[in-house]
Length: 365
Image: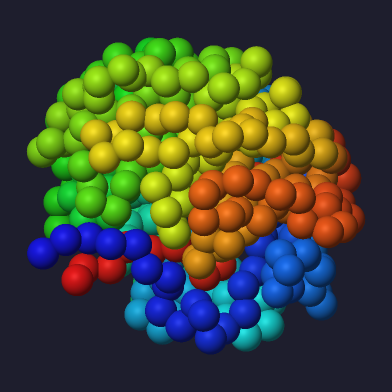
């Protein structure tokens, strides 16, 4: 049996959307419909109030995410200013958002910088902020999307974290320990409880992570660093792949990264360099710049995300209150989408982060 990456169920038949956590006071989520050419149009009702306040004092690239529980999907967005997470039910045809009962939910430290990630089955949401050395674990109601903190949560960790990702097989949680220049791993129990596995050196202040579909590779970017760490993942233990760390090919450090759902590529935002790096991935996990990379974006970039079919790559322009859009060729070459960038219509004071729906998913074959 092997894991391969497939579009989310029904992704080819339904509309695609891009969402931003606008990180304002009061906070909002802006919603865009994706056209056939990758251009974005704000949908009716956008922006959607979160009921909380944004804020925070640095770029946190994993502050908004989606979770699918069967045929129902939810969106979760961090409210840095008051330490809460807001939940919404997603209408898969129109992209509109409806606040779930009880939202927003207490989830961390006010004025911290949130990171969020769901379990692949949509059963749990893991949250952390870079102000406290812990990780909160919530069960997600499959009926309503309401969050309930599990017994034993929050779980103490070895440092302040920024960046979370669950392996596609659901067995391990990876956390970037920004305060320790390290990446930590945790085993996930059936009830969502976390057990530490180990803490492994990174090349800088670990900021964002992704895990490949075979659940045997982990990639990490470090705030203010041009280096990308690549690890072998084996029973929760991280071992650098030969040649790691790898350069992003830019003069600017990366804040966010995402693995391509349609080919062996990694895309990384090059922060203050106003670039997006595209790197091909060798079978052993090593990274190489795609010809022409890094590719220009409109302004400073934080989080990057792809559509479920991998045809388009979007980057949050955190100083603009806007989204940069690129098409991605089968060779990993990026080209600007007509009309980019696309404005949220909200204040650019907030540090905007981004996610796509339906999200790329891994399926057992």
